[in-house]
Image 1 (tube, rainbow, N blue to C red):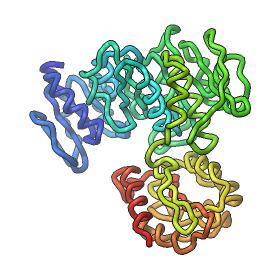
Image 2 (image 1 turned 135 degrees about the vertical axis):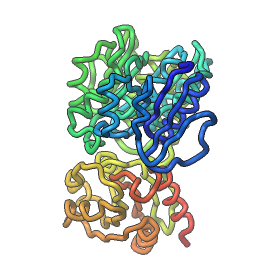
Image 3 (image 1 turned 90 degrees about the vertical axis):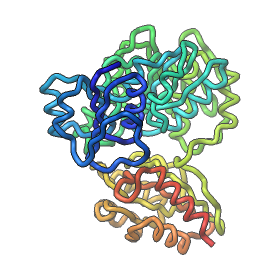
Image 4 (image 1 turned 45 degrees about the vertical axis):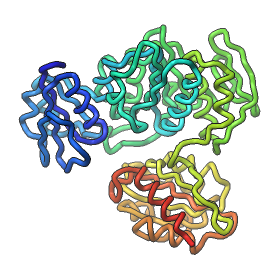
Length: 438
């Protein structure tokens, strides 16, 4: 990279990490951002804001940040010029060293599974890095890794769009349901982006797939890696599955059975656990270490996170539910009665699939954000609804109507960018508001 001219499109978390990393490698960096840049800039880089100019066409390499749409005129010009376009993931993975590189994607459950897998690998003697879409870009740790490192990386479809050589030793697709259709256009394109996680794997590698997911079953026909199936609903001849309350593993000469003891709520978390155990087993983690972690693991922030019980009503932060299917999973985790706070920046997926669960479990819907009118239109009649506009008003209203044994659930089914920088900021505000309630 020394002396190469590298253009970075987008100055979000991964774009800034790529800029820092490239400067360390001696590249000449142009960071291009159409909006404002938040946070301190790395020293020694060139910056343009308010536009993506033709200066990018002088680059030897382009780093495209996640979520930057492919239809941008500058990207089309870059493609016509034949300039290579990589993701930050592709860039950093070329410099990372590892014993095991575990890559995890899927529509829902990525952060929980990535965190849990990271905890499993921390029980080994080797240093473990938990990075990627979960918060810390791979670029920030790539040069600290060694041949003994375990690198566990959460990967989004956006990041996978611009890989070339990215090659995990163990990959996993947890599930595929409608999400990011405003970016990918179709479910086929979205699934194809996810499938790139195993694109460079060989028969020496392992791919963990959900046997209960139709899209995963279709994608498996294109995978050259050794398959490790997981299932919550069916007994498998080969793989890992739940039998009653027992985890059963029959894979690669392993035949094991033991009772599942976990603190994670909801059937979706059973799937996360099975997939995570499969990845750990494929990477050589002992059953003793796996079971010890499972007995103490409490989950991740902003995903079905208990905040407070007030006058007998539980308040649950599920701000990470940024798509409809995540909210479906949250609704299925509680029998009711529920008061749910929904809304934000929609992603183009229909809300109607939530109707039956809302009818059976929800006593009131409190709407916030720009997609509130669309949610109201599609779910009219499923439960009483109120438009509150802001999270502050919604939490206050929820406290006024909540009764003993109710669950007040923030599960927006939408992205947060209409009112917040990210779902974490939205979740933190929800928790602060709940804790201030008298």
